[in-house]
Length: 371
Image 1 (tube, rainbow, N blue to C red):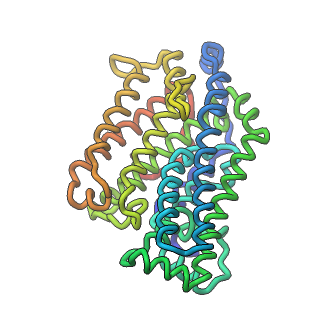
Image 2: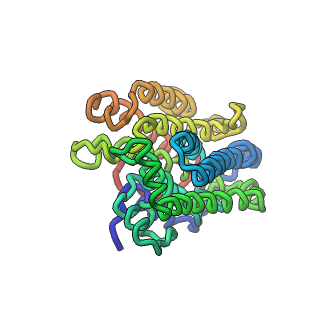
């Protein structure tokens, strides 16, 4: 089996190992459960946060597919521009979905199947040339999803007319992009149908704090997502995993090369919204922040909730100072990118160490980098 490029596959495998373990609860856990409306919090998450975010990502993906189908009928530069616009929207909306690897999403392994980057361009071109590919195999995780679309729609060194001609002259290229879209659409449909088909009730009723509970899964997925953001989206391009050697080619959406920072911002915004129990329309419902306050979690001289919210604000302010594209910023403005990275690490420590400890939640995945 070939080595998969990108951070996602290894992290996904590590995360999947421990989903079914159980942890005994003590008296302290029982006291916490009766002092806070956990079921109300979980209901808010499923009804107002998780399902709407997944649906929004699916809708954007469906809209991209409609635009691409029109491009297949009339391969013009204008239709290519429209497809690209829909692609950018779908990629941004996808950031709202990636965190929720819970229940129906566990088998779909969204983060690996949708967004293993950078894409293996050689494998993509080999699949197009030779045919007979199976997008369900591990070997193709880095040859599909948004990164593969990024490469095919924004081929480096090609004009818009050149790219249109590539599709005109290669029916297999046209088919391959369709197959990548269909793969993501099928998985997104499976996930949303699973939530609407009964899992939402299961999620709402699992009010414990043990490993495998809804709260345990949510907290683990939230931290898994911020680990992916810190490492794959920022740390690897910045050289944090390569002894300081910058790797701008490892940036997300490297071929579009104009939205990499905005994708990180969208990811961080979604992590904050999940922490707060905030819906797509901005309404704050019961969330992890309220739970921390209810159990009286402290940090230094204040509350843990305030420390986390303040750290979100600091991390976002530092990220707002990073210019597009990230590939240029890591090379020309390393200090600014590093400042944002440092604040992400601080946020991760609060969310991955302090918060689970206060809640009695076990972090069951391992990233191997010591944060």
